[in-house]
Image (cartoon, one colour):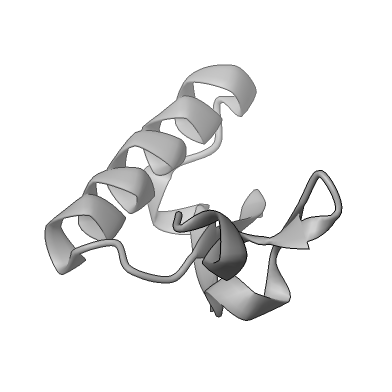
Length: 63
């Protein structure tokens, strides 16, 4: 069973997250030949203050 774990900075819309799930699922089907019913995708949203970029938080960078 292919499983993808995706970390994103918080703030994406429900539609964007749905698109990520659909596209990642299809990519795993294409790459592995696994049936779509066996593919799992987990999106974990990370608060901006907990995501570091170049030594500072994404919140500080205004992302």
